Image 1: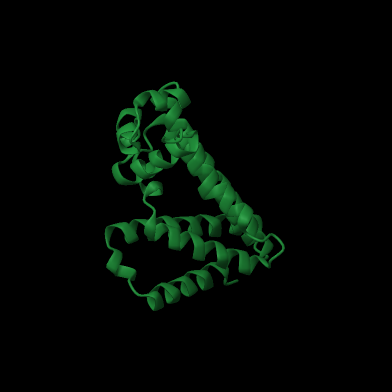
Image 2 (image 1 turned 120 degrees about the horizontal axis):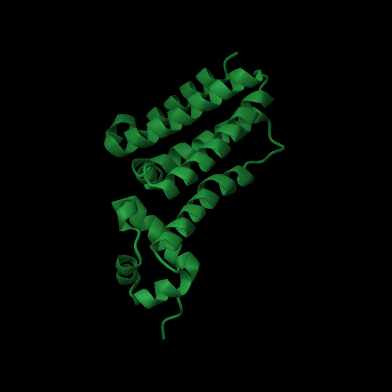
Length: 185
């Protein structure tokens, strides 16, 4: 006998569908087929597609922003936190397409709201790191924006032209140069 699917099972499947096929792929009927269940199972957890999309966006936000920030050791020096953050997100950028799929769907009001909230949280966290590194508030904000756009650009490049940063040595050298540029006073 198959165990019941949880809300988490559905949002995990929705994130995979989002990465593979964009926002349009997040719908109860095709996800039910993927999960090998009935669409009634999906409607048990979600009143409609909008509720599924909302829960999926919430999971993405929690897993890829709140959890990442929480896992960084706040007692570590800011240089170490920044390096650890960059190592983690650059590695994720090379394997996860959810971020890019959401950016491509930014015209959708639910996605736009989630993207704005996540972007604000990420920029605030980065600005705090640069503030801890001794930059004044305006410069910390500028460097946070540069760091974030570097991450987004890396994610796009990794998806569109993965051979551009193919070897581990190249990725390490790139990471070192980005961190040096961002932290240089």
